[in-house]
Image 1 (cartoon, rainbow, N blue to C red):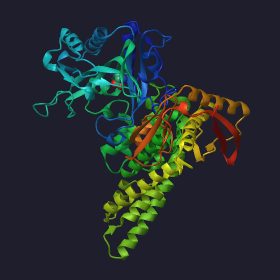
Image 2 (tube, rainbow, N blue to C red):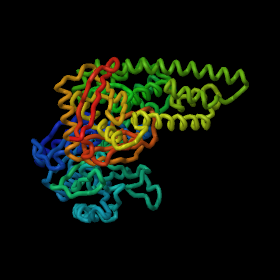
Image 3 (cartoon, helix red, strand yellow):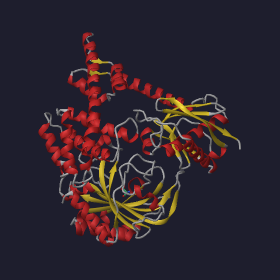
Image 4 (spheres, rainbow, N blue to C red):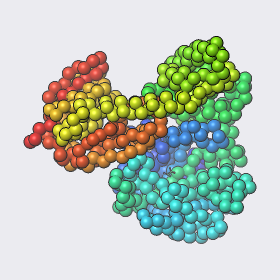
Length: 587
Ligand code: SER
């Protein structure tokens, strides 16, 4: 069965069970700034899981385009994908565990003819937030899954959500396919990732809402949210052991094999996976850039080019690969045909940029190589590796490849030291920048600092998401905020911004600080400076559910402390950058 056939079978099955088929939402969430991408089918449905009425009813089904960037580095093995399609069915306060499990069982064993013996399941073992899910286990048993194939696990395995920092979540029961491989040990079970058990479906019983302060509240309605991985299930049904062997990827893999000089399966997979993900992202309006979604796209395209180089394929052939890939995908996504030209242009431009970077970096490397040789050294110093990273955007692994080709070593220890120093400096720099005039930390300046976050968000709401902080300066008397925007901000827009900020002040919103990695901060939808640094811990300040920003602080505890916000002046600061001065008054 092809992926598209599985997709249609799934939708029709759930339609026959009274579900309305709804369209996939775009990859970039429309109304949820808490994550960069749609990462699950439930994502666009959050308001309805929380109780809003869905126009299509209480039983829904769809396929959802998803992108997960958590394990970009894992792509290249048999199963990891950044872009994937999630099939889903939902009950919005309608049916619950019994029907949900029965539907899944019927679909897998009757529609897909998967033998019952191939199925194992897991259920939630219970903790202080939620009791053990014996109910699901009993339903599975009643359907003929023996106790020996029903496993219990804790939150790490059998709890899903929320998708961002807060929102609907709950215990789940997961369905695994036994690939027939030998158990890797006595204890081997579905939580083991040796490849014997493949998770194909996840049925979440969403009955909680996790609040911003980490509490689990019972939801008004009990929902079901399920997700079935389309590519992975197709692979299982076709008896393949890698998703790259199914028809979505196979022709690209074959083409890469034909064009390449070096046969490297892992590089082929990375190229094939990232090509599809890039196509889907560009089709949904993402452009390469240095921040947020655009940065992920940039990374994907650059990785494609590096791996093409790895296997000896001329990067100019990327165009042919894209055309072939769009042709493969067009049955599943007819909208790609119209977007083909744009996709080719965007990738081409990024390729040009990166090729130049690669060339300049290589020249720099060769200079360093010759220097080292003339001094009789067999190691290139860490400062060069660092310069290549900082100035030419060469991740150390590219430099390592070059070193290997040229038979020299790199002083990676020295590089690490320099890199850490740089991280620390840019972190302090970022904090400094955000601090503005906060050298004197008193009540006024702290209030202005929080007001700046409210202003930043309000500007993005009124003028658009292109608004980004370009500078901030705070004194005890006023705040000054510079931001990107191509035109003068009108009187009316300023009024709106002022009004939005004052509303948040009147709402007396709590200001909460959390520490997290820059990756998590990005994922949580925080705005702020995302430089090319990973693994760094940053502070994220959240103001109610209004604003979320990376920032060094400090801030007031509650917006109620701020007084009234008044914009005094709006003017040009430099090309494409506007400046606002504003005050807080006591009435
Ligand atoms: N939200 C759950 C998941 O992502 C089920 O759809 O697995």
